[in-house]
Length: 327
Image 1: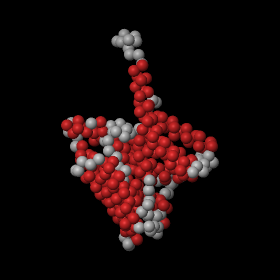
Image 2: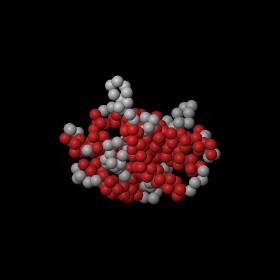
Image 3: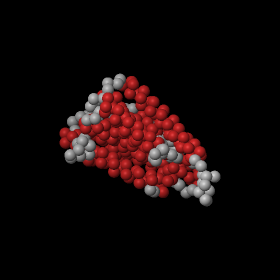
Image 4: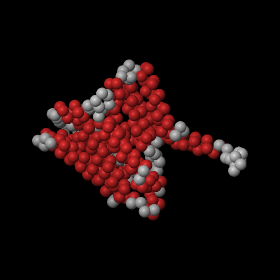
């Protein structure tokens, strides 16, 4: 664990928190970490299923557009007089699952590469969001709902929705680490053909992963709408970059077959804390984009360097004979 990429990320997170708290005014305040948590929630919600998708060797770049389309449909239905918000939330989750299923069908039924498919649906879903809502913003939701979306756990500054995120993280963790399905995801990422011959339902599993990613993106869209009390077609534009950066920086191999949720969640926290600290330090937005891009490159190079170093260290360690003397 001490030599793993997860440990490197946790150390980096602690270092960023300590340095930022000492050098940037406001970083050490509870208010700062409340906003960090609120910003991290939608990224982490989508990163959970995205981790599983990338482990299998696939990717979904349409998640931010799914968030935008979900927000637009929710806002338009509210504007048209559908006033039952629980019903609207349920319909939003169903819509997200359908949008994810569309990606899954193209990938599993038609055999198209997920990168090309989801780049196409990224544009398609965002365009549909503008068709549904145009340039308008729907912002007349009940104040109780918008306040409760960002309300803290009593006695703390932690938003209560973090508890929902934690429960979902545990569920995804159990699925990945403690079930045959989770083990099959790594097998699919390493060699899909061998996994098929081993009895893994590769195509069906991939399809449901895309459905799960769409549904979680829709949940992020619902949270986004109520957090900002506004449904717009351009909600979450560019969010897919943050999600992919967090997944890859978290140690998940872009080629599949390697990675886990602990590193991904640590990477989400690192990215959000760093970004908010730089904003408080009045760093220009263009520089923030450069930092995100640099971390994305680091996410590809860093884990490979750590793994190579660990392998060299293992090979240099002396082996022992039965008597306990070095061989």
